[in-house]
Length: 293
Picture 1: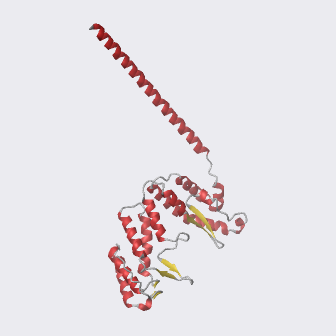
Picture 2: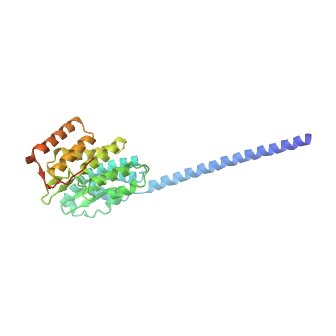
Picture 3: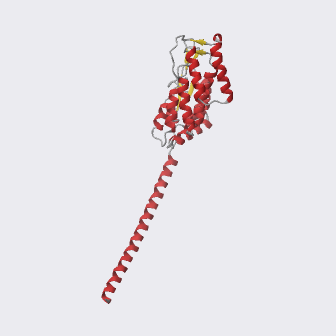
């Protein structure tokens, strides 16, 4: 019996020592991993510090030093997009830069002394400022949004709010000039509303549905809605027949949310369309039997 107890004791001691040694081994492994992570972080930091943004000089020439710094930050932010909310922040900044940079590049290219040295080739700019493009024409220069690139990026983010916004945006504007899809321009450059075709109601329904879901793109949707509402309240020249216009306005008044002033103006617009032909123009006089629900 004593011998059995001794053997049991020896086995227990052996197991305990093995466990302690294994614990020390695990601690050592954790320490090695921790040190490896620190080394990797140190290397990454050195690499980041050594990276030189290659477009700073050109940007200074065309856009000024302050804008150049903002573009460089924009460049770095581009590589941090990982969700629909971070995409929204980046997109919002793109819109801000678009206006500021258009003014700056116009000023630079209009300066006769500088224009001798400045090139009108801006192919490099899309790499310096992801999501932005310099559009050149014989008459002027402007900065615009590269929606094709943004669509590609939105496909890789977490969440779908950015995809939904870009989808509705593409339905609202022409791809090249971003001209509102609910308007048309005649050869003599007169603007006509497409109210009565169903476009206004369809877009407003989609926008309202997204706003109800508390999207981070609410402000951008409201911009589109404001333009649509302004057109349906104040347009006087229409592509569609009068009855089609009245029918769509009636459906819009029933299904879309408006403030009190807008409701009043909408009711007045419908009444004027019914009673005052002389203040409106209709390109088509053929009733297309538009059915809108």
